[in-house]
Amino acid sequence: MQDLDLTDILLLASVGIFSFKVLMERICNMAPSEPNFITAEEFLLLLGFLAGCTGLAHFQSMLFLLLGLALHIIVFHLKSSFSLISGACFCIISGVFYFPAAEQKCNPFCISAFVIRLSFPSVVDLYFSRLSLLESWKNFILQSKCYHRLQVLVILMAEMAFYTFCVQGTLLPNIPLYKLPLFVFLSVPWVVFHFMFIITTWGFVSKLEECASVLRAKGEVSDNNISEIMAAKGIRHFCLVSQIVTLYTLVSTVALSVSVWQETNPMYLSFLLIILPIESAMYDILSKLGKCVGGTAIGYALIAPAHRYSPSGNMVILPEDGFQAINSRAIELVNVVSRFFANHMIHNYGTDFSTNGIAKDYVSNKVQTFFSQRVLPGLHYDTYILYYSGHVLNDGKWALTEGNSQDLDTIIKWWRERNAGTGARLILFLDTAHSDEWLKGLWLVTPDFVAIQTGKLNVVYDEEIGNNYPLGELTKLWEDFNSEESKPEDYWGKKDIRVKPIYGVSKNWCCFKFHEPTVEDITQHVEHNFPRFMKPVTKVFTHLPCNTNVLSVCNCVINGFRRLKMKWFLPAVYDTGHGFKLVR
Image (tube, rainbow, N blue to C red):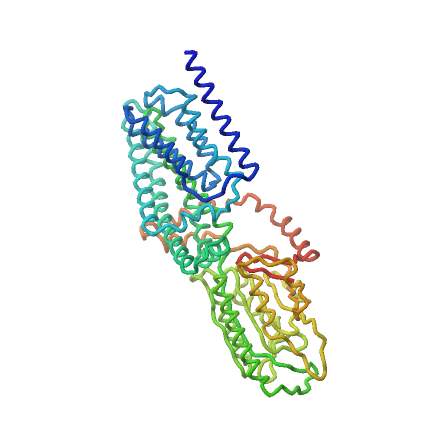
């Protein structure tokens, strides 16, 4: 007995020293941060423990218990927010209920030492790991189609096995009278939500496969690339709706397991510890992607080559090859704008180029049609980007053919007619000479979310040579600034830059939020993604709480502080959430 006590002490001391070593490595930044499902060392430890259990009477349940432990290690590596809660449940259920149910005597100190030795590095990495959410899940996102489909089928089999063992709890003799009707009552939502959960998981991995194929085609894998591609593929909206389904799935699992609690059934306990990390990790990734992935965006460009002109209206003579040079630069500008839309996964509604000027009716029809574009029927884009480069008057109005002009008020009017109350935002990018005049009254535009990115000339007007505005220079610099490569802080302070960027926003711009699903969106999502016999579920969802944002009651105060900050301390660089920034 004394040898056994001494062995326990030595074993726990060795685990304590190992834990201290792991902690010091993280504090001193000596541990590598690499995305893994499970390391080779962890896999071999689990395999060795399983080999030692081959002679046990309940080897099958022990196998599934170790599978549950492996899944918890995986969700630790994936930095799931619910991993600690799920891990605590694993320790309590396995220690208090599983081993007595399996009628297996074991040394609790040895088991504790093994679990700590196995899981401590991944647990402390929840805090110390430098990997972002997308980096942690990168291996899962980039998996092949076969692996994704196989994982969904394995989840389906695990859910069916868990329900089978739950049914066994109702067949035991001398069960309380209320247990059977309670189980039947809770089985209905469990079956419905888990049917939706499997379909949701299948749809989620299908969208991930679309993103992975685009990533492989681009050949560059980074957080920005993954986020932009996911936003373009509608991952954010899908996750925001699906997380509600997954949350109710998790709640139904907990409720069902409590109703038929079987502390003497080791297989039931093992499968419960398998299901919990799977469903909690699925809910966690959906909720986090819904927050970190940007929304959808669509862009439209109008380009009319702008040459030298006089503000007074006097004629300015162009050089012999001036018109051809201007058109060449304008065509290059078309390519720059198209590349910008493509690089940031912005849906390109079109780029119109005209050397003879643009008619007012054409601008009216085209812009209003652009503002009417939708991702799906009834689902608007989060951001609309309208680009213009061409002639303008002194007050910033677009100079159109036949002496017509286009002012900001009319554009805002068109915007309100098509998108008032939708929560979408409008970004105007104006690569013209006097568009900074439009910034003066922009703050008073309410309640719309409008921003204008333009530039201001650093040159002085000359009566002899006219106003030589550097066509496309601001666009090229802005496109380069928003590329993947990091830029120095003084990027816009170079002496050879003839036009400086400047932007302004409306009063409510800082209150903008990417579209969050409403009851109608959830209903539409269920109708489009689930079979017809699931339609009654849509009526259930209209009566279930869908907003989990507890701080929403403080939005008025928070938005007030944001407005003051934007008015008095406008940021030099403002991230739009689509991979590009507004700059001044």
